[in-house]
Every structure is written in C-alpha cells, then in structure tokens.
Image (cartoon, rainbow, N blue to C red; front, side, top):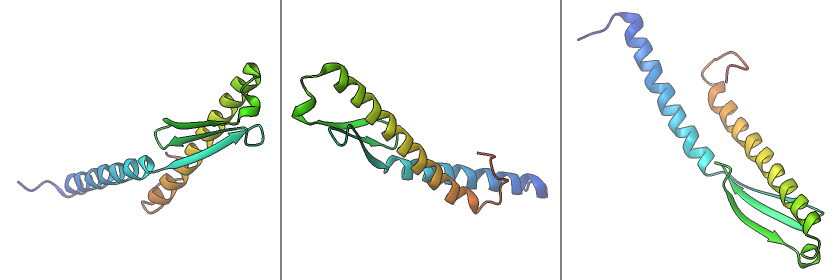
Length: 105
C-alpha cells in the first residue's frame, strides 16, 4: 500500500531520526572523561551515561575526610560537565546536518 506523498516522507524522516538517535546513543556510550579536584589530589573517570568508573585519591588527602568528600564531589561535578559538553558537541554535529532550527534539541 502506497501512502500519500507527505505520509511516506514523514515515515522516512521518522526512520532517519530513529537511526540518528540510535547512532548518537552509541557514540555517547563511548564517551570517557576524566576530571580532578584539589590540584589532582582526587581524580575521577566517568562514561557517557555519567556512570562513575574510577576514583583515584592521593594519600595526602586521606586523613582529612571533609576535604576529601568535597574534592570527590567537585571532581564528579566537573566530570558530569565534561560529559554534557561532549554529548552536546556530538549531538550538535549530528543534528546540524538535518537543517533543524538551533535550540530545538
């Protein structure tokens, strides 16, 4: 059954959008970032889904629990910002070819 002109185009556009979304999700899953706080005293690694993968703590800060907690939070927050920046860059590059108005996504 052949759909009227606009309906066929709409279905094709929806399929393309779904394929692009799947490709974007795969690319975001590959993102790996590293962020640190306290001049490198605490370093964290995070993936594109914002899962914390690793935490490295220098021995010098292990004795000051409050400072250590603050540095872990700061490093994690910085890693989240980096993941967001990389995700937006990938999304912008991919969506830029679709001719969508800026700010739509």
